[in-house]
Amino acid sequence: MTADLIGRLRQVVGPAAVLTDPADLAGYVSDWRAAYAGTAAAVVRPGRTEEVAAVVARCAEAGVAVVPQGGNTGLCGGAVPDRSGRQVVLSLTRMRRVRDLDVANQTITVEAGAVLRSVQEAAAAAGQLFPLSLGAEGSCTIGGNLATNAGGTGVLRYGTMRDLTLGLEVVLPDGRIWNGLRGLRKDNTGYDLKQLFIGSEGTLGVITAAVLKLFPAVRSRATAWVALPNPQAAVELIGVLRELAGDRLTGFEIMSRQSVEFVLRHVTGARDPLGDRQPWYALVELSDTLPAAGLDEVIESALGEAFEKGVVVDGVVAAGPAQAAALWALREGISEAQNHEGPSLKHDVSVPVSRIPAFVARTDRALEEAVPGIRIVTYGHIGDGNLHYNLSKPEGSDDAEFRARAATLARVIYDSAGAFDGSISAEHGLGQAKREIIADYKDGHELELMRGLKRLFDPRGLMNPGKVLPG
Image (cartoon, rainbow, N blue to C red; front, side, top):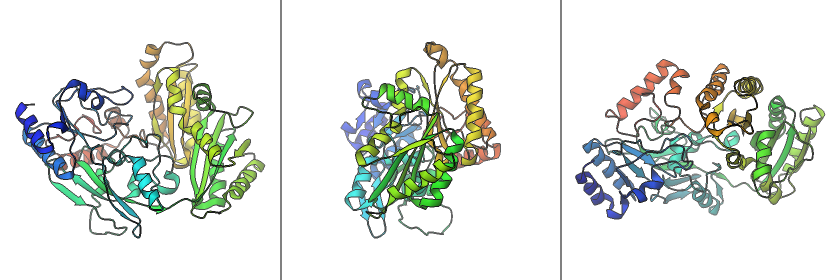
């Protein structure tokens, strides 16, 4: 990259918003887990859409690749530059404004750099709910949520970011601005372009703002921790709950005993809600807009019916918000707790809900055959078929030796997911972690259509190259 381009970028956003010192770049050129790292010629931090457009246009003129980045909380390296030192990281974190909040239309228009929690809080202040919720909500940004089509714990009722988005503003790879910020539930005027950018991980353009759906605020909840004999019981329990609670079933998370053991061992203050150890657990949440909806009675009735059928072994209903928070802390602490046990090989897959029991049985068996004594940390949003299939080394074994098996073990999980008509990425995206292996699991015609879209939008391949599509 020439000093001339650096100078032109500084003219656009101001000298303070163009970082080139290695010490200043450090937080932008690797992911939060230090699993992926690169180098960059510069980090540019525009403050408004017109500046993003000007930066992208100048980089395009110079033939320099752009790597869009939000909170940098991803797990697949999708927002990390390569090691060439010639790419520009485009950080959207200065663009945090709430541009509009329309209660009557139940929409909120926010910039891409807005932190998810701040959007939740803005909605709550207006008596509304923005329902996307995930572990990184205090640091991830809306642009990143859109780029990866984030899901989280509320998908069962509210859907993914694809379902929560009505309109987008996007800077195209040549610097043009597409203004699609329409808060319409019905717009039958041709191709739904916004869906091309959602989930594209910044490879087709830079999302700079979005119109998101709001919902009535939740005024009552019921939360339960349930012990289960096996994943089949979890699937059956979902059926019981849906029959009795309908769309008030907001969350249904499953956790293996190994997952819970790590939390109890490493998270301060964690307590086992039940006395006896069981192989599987579910965290169930019902919610309603009514302040006195009788949800405790509904969830107790559902669990009682499931107990009579032999589906539920034991369970407890939270007596109030503090106990509910403690139950959720057990679920949310799994990923961090696993890190204390050595290398954590993370996998994010989905299969049809009905096939989860067979998938888990086959995958666990294959993993045990590959590495006897392997500790399998399985948990996730079973209500929508999404499981996080994380692996820890056998106790007492060597870290490096276990890491060396990562690709082989990933293949075991992905091949199993494919055998059950599943996906190797449910909500984390492909990034650079899965861009090559995806060719073995997607139809060739589908990949060619994706490559065609990339060529149409970004013919020079300057928008987040090396991500999503196989080389």
